[in-house]
Image (tube, rainbow, N blue to C red):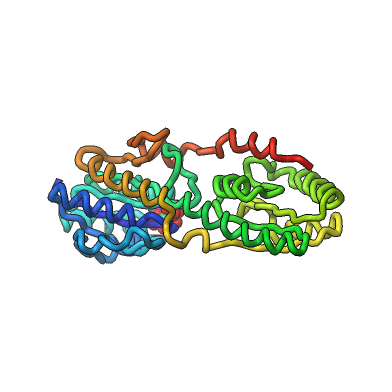
Length: 328
Ligand code: ADP
């Protein structure tokens, strides 16, 4: 292999830069030229790239975001866009493309497979941790740390005012962030897809009200609800209104939002990104259509189809820990 290209695509995740650095340094040691295309798949559409050298990636590990920028690229959903991306890769005689991103970016990779005969490798990076075939995705540990620190601060004011707080965390349609952050912050309630039947939220609401009322009678203190985004109709404001309308419970709402995507990557993410990046270059020498992961401490190469199509449920052990923490 002589030429390799990389993109960072979809939602950015802290640790993407560490993955870029690992790939560039690994290419350098193997005498492979490394092309960095900008703005996700848009860089392939617009032929916007830079040859990446070790000097360019030396000081980036500690920064969130991505030096290659990231973006959505609607053109990838059409044959004409896929053909355009393939043409760029052919023009530069690229042997392999490494995509650092989430499941959407990997679907883009699979679509590109029909138009380009080069090798395609995925490196899982998304704060949501919603990809199978890896215990953790790059960015997840940082997002959990950031949200935990934020809720610790919210807890201080919640305690001072003996208040109910509804804190919405990210996760798209999975509860990895909600469960991990809920447990880390000793949240009185975690509301997520895994423990709330979306067709019976009235029942969830009744249980929650009972829990809040019991707690308020027993000890006048704060009550933190960690709510997964996209779960409750009308979001946290909808839940706030429901609590007030049904039981005159006052609550404050805090949407953590994009702070969970940014910030200096946690050491776990930097290390994971470095390991996955190096393994991705090794895989790119002979394999295609695989995602690099780490399962039970071992680096793995799994079919990209399995990684995107399988569900990765929140660990059952976390559910049962949460159940056992209910003491009201
Ligand atoms: P993430 O990788 O974080 O899940 P997105 O879902 O936004 O982010 O996907 C990133 C990009 O991947 C999209 O903007 C698009 O260019 C490409 N992509 C996603 N799904 C497909 C698909 N089914 N076919 C082709 N390209 C896709």
